[in-house]
Image (cartoon, rainbow, N blue to C red; front, side, top):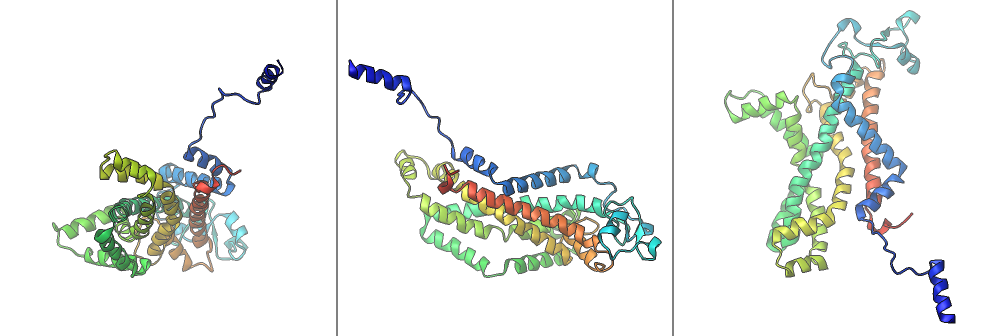
Length: 348
């Protein structure tokens, strides 16, 4: 009787319930919860989403066409800008700055609206930000998966090619590639393949060769990372089980190995996106990036730097836009790295 009463007490108190089922939580769901607790990462994600919306609706947000010039309004600025930058004294106060409130951030030396050009420049930076990882994943995954899974002589050959590519400084290699592409397509014969490439580059505002230059140099780090992840994953139990069940090599590589190494790859590429943006900005700064009149934050900073002592707004505002977007991707990458770390799973 005492034992029966004890069992009833345990059941009534809820200490032991055999029919209770605990619902498991996937790695991605757990990572998203940790991500939401990282305020800087969420702030970075919000800034990136705002930038994407600005790029998509640039035609609506921009007040003027980015190439529209008004020489009579050149080097003008709104009143509030002259209050922020004390060196910019309005003409009415005995200074040199023409006050024109039709331009929210001012106008450059050709009378083009700086605000509208920054808005359209968002498209260029985000195109590079998303095109760089596409090239890196497409080539790096193929090379890294093949080298890591098969190993042997094939691995040695592919990794030596990567080492040769790494021997060149990345930015210098991109500059050399851009210089070669631009000069080789400057005066081609009509009807040739080079002529077609030059016309396609012009139609995209100079973005084609930027994509090619970044794409040819962005995959090496991804290939090394993928190879290292595959080397550790190919000997795991689930891969051995797939082999024992007769799974084909492509199925093992793409259905078993790749999904389990995807987290570090996403983190690595997210952290590399600011580097791609900086490459484009630097190329535009030195005149090898987008072609005029297509606006780029790098080319705007270059133009504004020539008059930064007199009109600092022309360089500082596009520089701030570049700063916020690059740091947003950095914050997001750091947050993804912490969220996808398996050692953090279950941590508060």
